[in-house]
Length: 347
Picture (cartoon, rainbow, N blue to C red):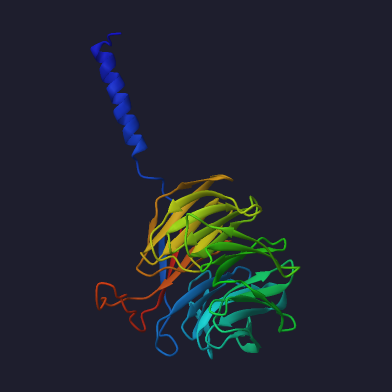
């Protein structure tokens, strides 16, 4: 059928506009930098960052910083104190009902208890070499440490400050997430698996491969819809998984350099966020329980690769420092001592 010239113009215009819509940039998450808080020089001088943990009720942000934990006010972003006397701080677990929180000291192979108000150390529990990631299971009332080089997990009774059990993880464990009902899910970077742990029975219930991701290190969880978000640094992918069956439902490419502590999930906005060494936060919206869509990534700073979210304000916190030039094409840029800072992103 012959199409009139004017109709042909309309048809062509329709397809051009449709193509423009299809090629449009993804929608924005709405986040932008609202504050940059300086942390001061690290104890011992070496700039080293690991987990950032929010104490939402205590309105504190715990920032791992070399041989110290820097405590930042969650509302005005000022440094309110530091916890010293550590060898190499890794992570922090918040146990609100005890009025104490707990630090993993990887080089000391121990867990340090401290009072949340005075920030004074109150005890120390021996663990295993490279005691690293840490999580609290409210259903079991136990703390779980994940000890990288030792390839195991330590279950600790925080009230008694005693070790209950050590579990063989068969590989190097990284970040974990708890569902609040008794299950814990841990990324195992060495075996390319998510390990599902019953925190009451203290037993490993399942091991699930994370392909197409590799070397999974960052974990977040949507408790309501039973969905896991595992980010890898071997094959740099963010993987959406079913928390009950372990089935991989979807995957997204992300930039290189995610680390343990790089992923968070915000249930109020149904978004999962993954930060990376490359200076990006990848943002995905949970459109359906089995479907994510990518939003526009947030540009941050080089090596701002560990992140936490305040569940009350939805602010994001990332730590990094200034860096000098790399010594060679394969060398990493060295951190400049005394330049550590915390980036706060909000809407």
